[in-house]
Image 1 (cartoon, rainbow, N blue to C red):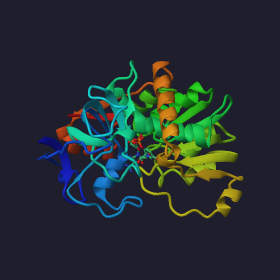
Image 2: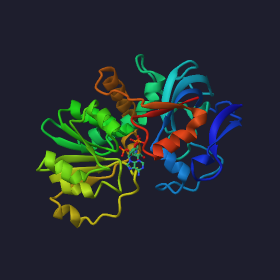
Image 3: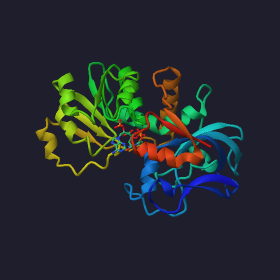
Length: 333
Ligand SMILES: NC(=O)c1ccc[n+]([C@@H]2O[C@H](COP(=O)([O-])OP(=O)(O)OC[C@H]3O[C@@H](n4cnc5c(N)ncnc54)[C@H](OP(=O)(O)O)[C@@H]3O)[C@@H](O)[C@H]2O)c1
């Protein structure tokens, strides 16, 4: 028997139960991973609430989460490139991240093809804090808009897990970085992590604040907040600028009138998903290797703001939804 956090229906964090379950031996092609660090992601909240994106109806009981790191305990038939004792991590188990969840558990059977072996110098805690958030930053920077020296970039929710990595990476590439944040403590954090200017968007009009700093507007906007920030950001983006909406922490962006992009200065918009970035297994491994290298070189610093015991995952969800978390949060079995 192992322990896991399960929900029996969609709803509030109170639906999350710490339960003992049977875990069968790994099937052919699978490895059994003893988790030592489990990622907390905003999409875990969306899956818990239900009705997220295009998720089909859930089959209950459901174990939340889809990203973790740990040590291989045993392998099923046909698995040759992963061995017991290997330190590994994974992000999803094939298919969309929010489907086939199951990482809020002490152990899990995972397709061996989804496992990334961790190099020396990368801890399991770092890997769990880094992979999905880092791959999302990689998606934005490597596939959609790569900041260059002279650019001014606006990062919304700059103290979030993805936001902090975007700030560090954009600064490293030579951009001037503006970040919106929800509190003075988060402002301090982002200024230590690549932001040149922090804007308290709950207290001030962020469009006016950006225009005061950069009267001509920013070259690109990286936005994981969505409903509250995306369309207003058109008014502080320079002509021909690029706006990337990668997340919906405040809700989905409303339907967009394409002509608005012409009126606001020939803007471009994109709504990327990490799963298309790493759909090809080689791309997945190359992107992970780049992240590990950036961490080892000190370009990316994984802020593991806080960790919670796995059995306290409901409190982690409450804190995340109340905007009390900063950086990446990890659950420890
Ligand atoms: N496209 C993809 O493939 C992909 C991949 C990974 C993540 N995502 C999405 O990207 C977004 C950010 O992910 P993350 O891991 O960086 O998030 P996170 O660390 O959980 O941070 C979310 C932050 O959003 C801000 N926020 C603004 N309005 C909010 C609201 N109404 N409720 C809660 N938070 C609000 C808060 O920061 P302040 O207090 O500073 O406002 C909060 O701390 C999420 O929507 C996530 O699902 C998308």
